[in-house]
Amino acid sequence: MPPTPCIYTEPLEMIAINQSVVAVERIVLVIDGRRLDLDESNLFAWRDGFRHLRTDALDDSQVTTETRGCYAMMLQFWADLERKLPWKGKIVHWKYGNYIHEYS
Image (tube, rainbow, N blue to C red; front, top):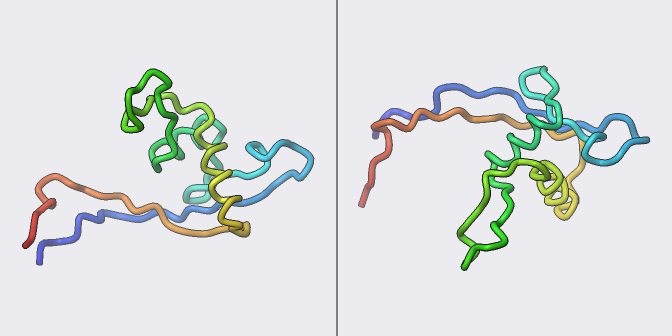
């Protein structure tokens, strides 16, 4: 069995703060004790797969690199699943390189 491509993990939290502001600003991501700002949260969500489809695409496989609004998409996904906050998890960092193998 090849060595694991996981090189390290970081704690991740999604927490609710100030109830008097809009949802995107009320629910924050905290990675290893550091609170992400809205731009960082959008980029995190984009990297986690919450992406906009191109309006001129011929099929659904075309996504944009635009990150604005991706965090809102992620929060809506959580709301649709009726997830409760606070939520704690881990970010897994991978080293792909030569670790990708096909097995039959």
